[in-house]
Image (cartoon, rainbow, N blue to C red; front, side):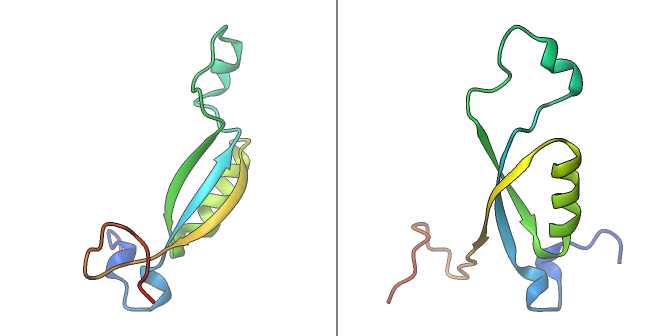
Length: 87
């Protein structure tokens, strides 16, 4: 259904989110001619739902970016702010 988000998915994999670390993206092809850098960091981070991973990989590649790492994001239903699991 159009307009559904990954968090409302009925499948277990549909609600999973991933963080991409991407290098080499530029805002537009014309910015290569500037005498100053666009951003000071080499990498950017993107949060991508499981069902959009393939589309985002293609888009990043078309834009000249390189995916350095992909990490799953843990969902904590209790809202813990430290992001670490207790064992």
